[in-house]
Image (cartoon, rainbow, N blue to C red; front, side, top):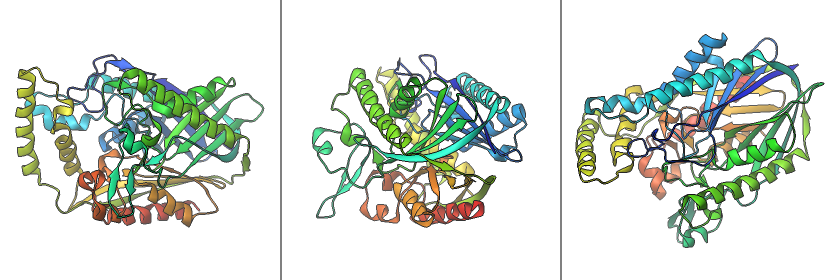
Length: 449
């Protein structure tokens, strides 16, 4: 019998706390409250805790801190605790690893005080989920979502790449929708003999209806709005959300052209309603999931990095120059979001600290209950990774989740490097990274199958 526990905690930051860009990106407006949600799965012998956080990403340092704090507070093995960031771009930052290369300059990327609050709230949610469990029946369905996702990399008939941002100009919105996955996947966990119900939702699209520019707003974006709508429809219904591989998928075709906060909020509401409609369609066509025990497997994958990544010494020299540019902007009273190049350089320096001989060791995990399975992936994966796994495991109701470890950055297809564009330019992995990750995820799923 499957038992679950569920709890959530509000992680709304005080105004003035740095948002996703860090430097010169202090929170000025809260659109809606972000949360950390904890879902415990247990078959009586094994237990797995899944966290979903309304943040842009959790680096390796964040993952380790969460595992240690929650493990100490609940007794759960650290290897059975997995945390995911939904990847909303308008969110407070917790990427304290980026603080380390900035310490010599007296600069702070992520607020340490808010980070402690975030950890405390995550622990509190985990403790509540572990302490209050109930038996459930599981069912599965999926519903078509209309008017949310679009591919942001569109090739025309001549093979030229057109890149569509999350809040693009009108001519970019007129481009075709492109290849997407239109389905929202829903695992419903209904309390046996009781009123409680938890919906686990999974959809492959950047949660960036409010913008991919990572400005000074805070919102759980359209997934948060969809969950709010669904939870208000019936008492004792709770939702948690896990973003699927969406490195090349965003809502750019279906947002308006305004940039004011009210325009951004409007798009969050509209796209959230569209996602909720897809969930409702799924709930009308649910099928039971019969389980024979909870299975979980985690494995290390050594992700190859591109050979042209700068050396540590070169990055540190570039950082010194970027800090001077930033300070000059401050002296002139100019805002420089992210500190100009500082954010990018700090992220690459913390990445190099984790690198061993040109590869980044990170983790892939899989869990299964009956026909339901989840693949938990590092990096900002392209949709094609999910499509590859669905083709290989057609008999599973498979939820692909990414990112878990955000340190890696983009995991594009090999063709992306030939086509060029934004993702090819900023990716840290080599063209071999895609197949390396697919192979590791495949093996993890085979272990639980």
